[in-house]
Length: 310
Image (cartoon, rainbow, N blue to C red; front, side):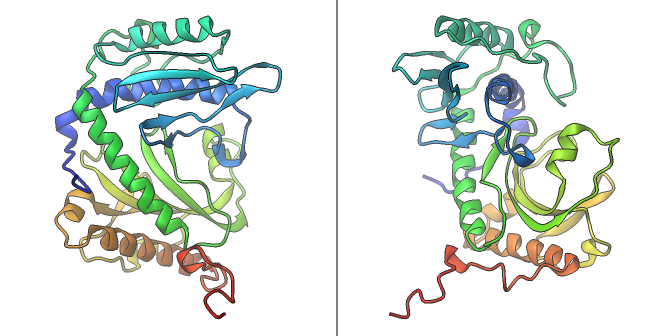
């Protein structure tokens, strides 16, 4: 099976728009039913051996403890409850409205009644999910390919994450922006503006160097690996990146380090190339923010100073 198969945005744009809304519906349930964590760590999905999971939520006597999984091999939505009950239905052939209706019927049948703000977030329209019959393209082959790429990227980001001993997020898939990311924290608290939206205030209350992968959008219609430092230190865009195909791009008043997915696919060792890129972007941000890279290093996930010496 190809490590990084082709995934041009134009080929699956309709399927992506439909599934993205499916994911936002489930993600909003996760947001409603989970315990709040710093920097929104409770919100994203995590890849599994069959698709994506919310992880367990609810419980503690307030409502049943349950999880919602996208099985992207069988193309079914699966709800499981701690007491052993479960229910599932097919994702194929559904509009957003049909998915929304069937999911909430399924949850109610299991005694679960979450409340969500049932409109899309930052997707260019505010059509309530219950009324959206326009987005109705679910392509099993393309959605499975998306998940396979996501899973390989998750493992790659996890390998990159292992080399940092400081505060770091899990590798997780954000349903609102549809990227997968891991974030390193420098340890410095940031004075965020009270005028910023609450999502931004919580996400960037500490200085970060964040890295990840997205599948493309209208602004940048191609998949790519990325990294950024926030708040951005002056001169970041002048720092060198590796490999030579990597570049800095302007992004809403700051800069993104970018390595395009299609460039990676053509390289002899794509895993090594992406790790080199992520390391170079981290080094750029760490240098300018004064991170002690040596102190926070854990090569291969090891901080034991005596490992291998006995």
